Length: 174
Image (tube, rainbow, N blue to C red; front, side, top):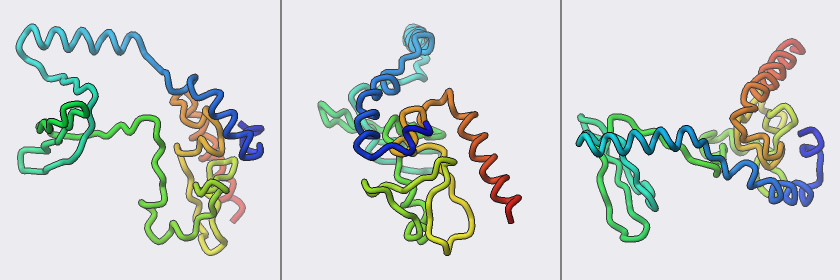
């Protein structure tokens, strides 16, 4: 990661393209098998709770006192199906979200990389101008600065430890 972080932008893009399939073709055969078995058994017993919506996307949410209705659109037929739920979790997949919209006015204080994304130091701290005295750290969305390992769940403990060490070091320096 150290080499990637300091590499020129064109080299980073080349490496990301080369290694993309190592990160994004993840399949957990045990999980897939368990989901299939559960879906099949629920269907057989007429108690189908697990619903699979292939070739679809969420197009909206409607809240009510009973929970949430998720509007799911079939991308092929364009049919909208309301799916009742008590809770909704959006697992956004492998497209990292831009942190700037949730930062409000603080977003104007972020330095940007040549590609327009936030500049991020090796310790996952977002580079900001000097008027911001606190640290903003990204746990995710750093693949452009840290390489494909930045999105691996298996490395989360290491990333968190590096962030905690950075915060502790910066706090001790005050």
